Length: 556
Image (cartoon, rainbow, N blue to C red; front, side, top):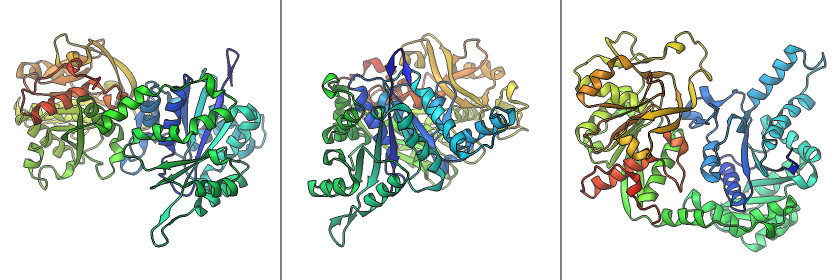
């Protein structure tokens, strides 16, 4: 809890009444406000599910798996954390019930507990507190910890007990509890109701935690009278009852919470003098100005397997928006189910799009639809970005229709293909377990001088995050390059192809990495900025070969 004589402070964010209220966004927004006051902030998510990590979970059920630089497969909320506080987090920032129990059982098997009876209290709770403690030891001024799930859920009881104990362990002035709850509006009576908030806080207090601030989610502002009622019945100061109304965009939330004074309440609770930490939110306000000041609308098609749950591609969606803000365009994402392309969805719909993205994924379902989308983009000069599987798809499509390899495929889909242009890495051949066995985390790549991607990055050495097993089969590389597809980026040893492009196309770029994880609202990722810049040129009927994002005025 102390680093170089500095005491680290901790903020615990819990939620009540209902899931999906926005704990992650509230925690992220608070992180942004504290960082804008000059404090060093890091964040953590405690998830109550029994999976060791989200890596093997279906994106259609749980949402995207976010990947950290050090190869952690984590909850999607870490994406919000990184985008808001603009810090690269690690696998230490996501802890699940599964990983906690797995570690405790391993200790028990080794005899670390000296034959004692292993119990939820103290052994599980101590393990949870140790995870939090490790983050605090890294030197941040404030660690913000989001507790997944809803107060009252049986599976989060050990986490609630752990954070209750943490105030005793760390010191009262070093811990702040923020509770997010719902204040619904009932149309028949024309009233906002505080009863769900009262019950939620009562449940939290029954577990030994008195919230220091209550953030009230609602679809309209909460009156001062309602704040007084919540203050009285929940035993918090009226200024600590924070109204958090539905915002036009998620990037408005920090400004709304600043106006309500949440960051000041948290600082006072933690014994930090607000006057010593004046806030400078000008950079974030500029982001919001761009968000609300877009004029042109661009239609971007995302052709994927899990489009019925857009959270499966949350970072892709946000990266598209970031690039749109930079060029002054509102981006409308059209979600296209890969299995229905192009049989049920008219190919003309794809041709009318301003840009197409095929994101990452695994398995056979929808693969041929993605290949069809890549072909439509290539043959109709529609800006296209292939991400991970999306790059593999464009390689297969190019092999089939430009190189004449009609049987070209990925060995993930077909082991009998005569042209395995995408194949399994040799070191993956004998792996049976799925969790955490891919090429995961940040890897460097060397880009060709004069290539489209080098122009976009403004560098020939880059680092991107990966999450995959299969690779471009390098023995076909010469054939692709002779036919016009350039392998423009490789691993430093030249063995693995990381980027491909067709230079004669308006924008036909693929990467084996996941660039969406590193995009920021005030610093869009170069590959997405290149795509949206080309899409804007297409929409305006201009020559679309705009390859250098440095030419875009980001001060708009």
